Image 1 (tube, helix red, strand yellow):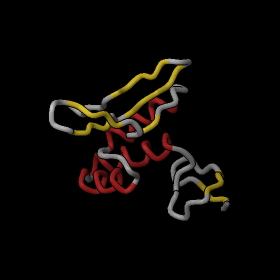
Image 2 (tube, helix red, strand yellow):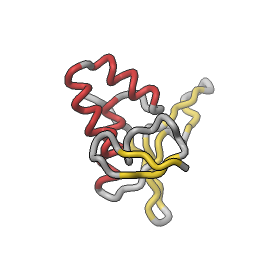
Image 3 (tube, helix red, strand yellow):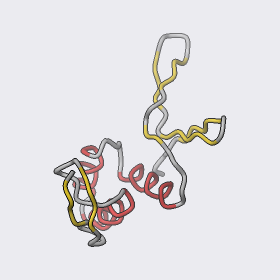
Length: 107
């Protein structure tokens, strides 16, 4: 593990990932919210490299983390309709014995 300094808040953090520049997803979302207002194309590319489909999903995950809601991203896939098709839910959260599925839509 390496100790790095967050580009957004300046705090020290430990990581195994050489490319990680932010201490958590909240700092990451803050930094790239500013970027996305200037250049949406760069923000979209960034979101994809982080494994998300959009900056809105990055912001949603950050909002959940900030409020203490533990969510997983695209871990559950379901079969649906008559022909075998698959659908992957954006976020899921498990509270006690119940699982909640959340789908993020930008507009």
